[in-house]
Image (cartoon, rainbow, N blue to C red; front, side, top):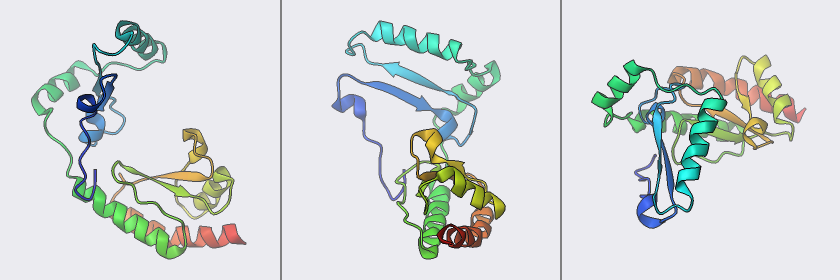
Length: 175
C-alpha cells in the first residue's frame, strides 16, 4: 500500500471471509507463489471450499513451495518490502505518462499500473510499444480490454528510459 494507506482487517469486518495471502508479493519474490489461504469456519460450506481449492491447486499444475522456501518463510515471515521504493517508481511512471498525455490512475498499492490505452485495441497498442522497445502486457488477459499492465518491478532507470517511448507510441496511435 502507498501514501500511508493500510490494508483493512477484512476478517474482523466480514464474517463470511476467505483470506488469500502471498509472501511472494509482500517480499517481492515474483513468481514464487508462496502464501496461504485461510477460510473462516463461519464461512458457509468452508470444508467444500477448502477441498475445491486443494483440487484446483493440484489440477491446474501449481506446485507447493519447495521445502527450502518453506524454511525461509518460517524464519522471515514478518519481513516485507520497503514500499517507498515502489511508491517512488509509481510516482515517476504515472507523472511521466500523465505528462505525455495518457489518462492515468495511480494505484494505491501493488506492483503494477493499469494504463488506459489511447486506442480500444490494447493488443495493437502493445505492438506499438514493442516497436519502441517497451514490453507491456495487454489488459484483455486480465479482463481489462483497452488497458495495458505495466510492471514497477523493473529498475527505476528502466522506467525513466521508457517514458519517451511511451510518448512516441501515443503519437503513433493518434496518427
